[in-house]
Amino acid sequence: MSGPVFLPECPALLMENDLRVLVIADLHFGIESGLARSGVHVQSQSAARAERALAAVRETSPDLVLLLGDVKHSVPLTSRQEYAELPAILDRFRRLAPLRVAPGNHDGGLARFLQEGELLPAAGTVIDGVGYLHGHTHPGPALLGRLIVCGHLHPVVSLTDEVGCSLRAEPAYLYSPLLGEYAGTETRLLVLPPACEFSGGVDVLGVGESGLGPLARCIDQEHAEVWLRDGTYIGRLGEIREQRGA
Image (cartoon, rainbow, N blue to C red):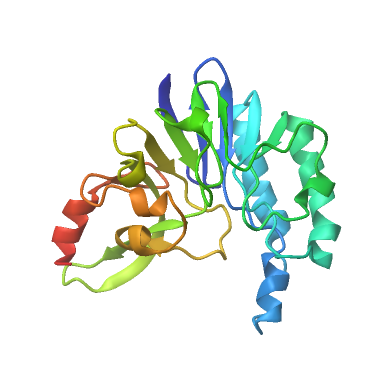
């Protein structure tokens, strides 16, 4: 298998072996209506968000587009915004490549917008030798001992100036062997940053204590590695912690 290719503008990840699989996580279409219910009113950015993802599809010409969960945002119900926007957005993906969706914790009711065979098991699936799931559940037995690619954890890395003042938080990729209950299985985890600009994030040093599920608490807090979404290598968690004096 060739190394994964980072597509920073979406962000997205191209995995290539026998198949070219384009992976996109946490699009959260409909998030604007959720923000409005909290008193924050912003115009829908679904069209622009979808266009960034579709541009990645056109750029890579994949054999398969895999959406790693939280395609929609509202829980437990489906919002009017999602009913209005999702059918056309998903059809645009289908016109470019076959589509599969690993359901996330925000995806209740998403099946009504999907075609037969597009919805994958919540515990994950193996495609071309790689395990994929959203990341809020335990992976199924077939995924253990492999590289698992997931979303859900929304990793970001806080960039600081020379005196240690935080400048901004940048979406990041997080790669780690899995410890804890998965120790000894040789299972590795690659976490994608969210493709939604409003979804926020968890600093890479705090993912393990975030409470975001079984995979988060099994990340190697010393040896996990971090990249920015453009592929810039940041370092290991232990090194980042030492640099911050944390």
